[in-house]
Length: 294
Image (cartoon, rainbow, N blue to C red; front, side, top):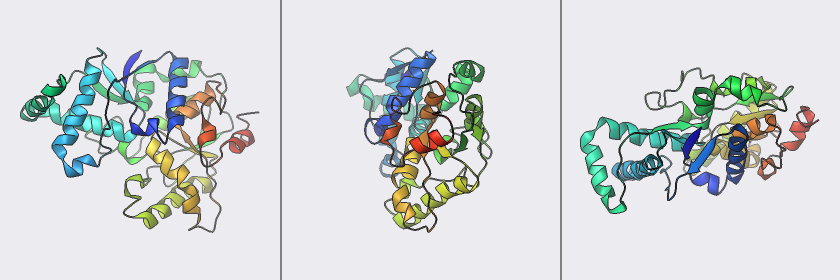
């Protein structure tokens, strides 16, 4: 299995642990990830608010980079990157006039958008392409005893006309993956909540409150940790958890894992190999208490 890989900015900065764990997991599963050479920021849903054409052009170029590799899909591990790339593709595929205008703007780069690759997320690829039965056979350390709360994040399910992998009102993909890894899924109120990452600067107080609620909800339901397919959600819930704690009398201390880290643990990698030690909230005690590291 080969994919063009669009890492996105976060993996090369604040979420290096996600890059490390993604590459470890991909290699162990026999998935070849070919990083796009010269990729640029997807715009993270902000550039389009200032210049919609620029946002579309940037991602047309990113997609064109994948098309040159001769693969059928571009894979990401970021909800927002997936959304931005799929948004651009949908616009370009439906609007010939826009596509021609964008391609005219790309002439100086030597790139042209053709529309012959799809955009997928690792979570979707594991289910749709790799197969859960195949993934289950790769498990070396079943995560028996680990109670996980799956926090999807807005951009992997919304808007459904652009994302559309599953029922956005009741997604099950994260639970399906966790189950084959041997973990126990925990139901909690904030499963489909917003992490607040994109509003942290204009509405910091409100977002810190959201962060606390998002972490306390699964804790009250008995979860050992939160697992998310989005680095921005992980950053918000992990890095800002100490700040959110100041507004709550109850102790939060809820470890937040990236999806590839959860998979990596089941594949037999150590927390250090998956760079879990980089997290703000220490996940090691939780993993030991849940017998994952016994």
